[in-house]
Amino acid sequence: MLSYQHIYHAGNLADVQKHALLARMLSYMTVKDKPLSYFETHAGRGLYALDAAEAVKTGEASAGIDAVEALGWFSQDHPYMAALTQVRAQYGGRSYPGSPVLAAQLLRPQDRMTLAELHPREFEALDRTMNGTGARCLKQDGFEMLLAATPPEPRRGLVLIDPSYELKSDYDMLPGFVAKLHRKWNVGVVALWYPILTSGAHQPMLQALEAKDLPGVLRHEVQFGPARPGHRMIGSGLYLINTPFGTSDEADRLSTLFAAL
Image (cartoon, rainbow, N blue to C red; front, side, top):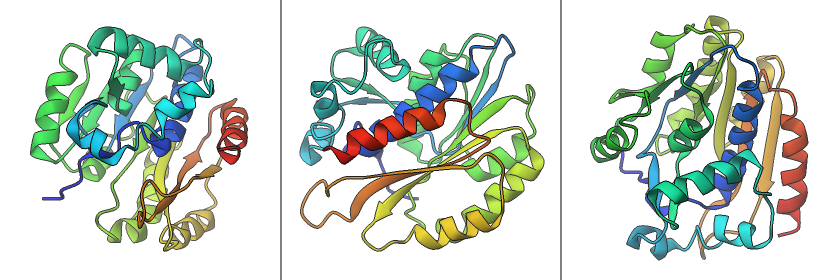
């Protein structure tokens, strides 16, 4: 069983990039009355306490969401900040939403959410947290779930593919997987997150994705310093397919803000 637990990294700068763009995309996609389908392949536990010992130990939230809030990166009406405010009001001031809880704040009753998570303890926490939201939580391999569930009904929708990359084979597998997913669900918005490491492990994956000639691609990357000495992650990336209108504007804004850190 893979050991990754996001509590050590919740609210870090990678989360800020990923969640700000996710919130902006969902906010745009829910303007229309038409329902949509939302999927996650690696959902985690859904909700995190930034004052938990694990989060305090790494200090990544202090250098992440805490720092950028102090700098005023997000107005109160930004969908990311609006969702954060709702989560804190419900769960406490040091609560931080993983992407499932963030999405639940932005989706509507007519929308469908399906979440996959394999880690036993993370899945149990996810299932508890999402109880009452209407989300379908599956203790299942997320890649298998997604291929089995697509094309979905309703066909409009978005998937967040957010593996930990503990399995190095993920880098090799993902370009073919994403292309296959797009063939099955050609109208779906695909958001693939990846870490930017000192090793450059993501580069061959991105070259292979570019060769697929997928539609509406937006590749957004931000750089930041290592969370601690010897830490190999120095940035965060999102590779988007069928990118919703307005996402590139938010990406450009975030690029400027990250560059000034």
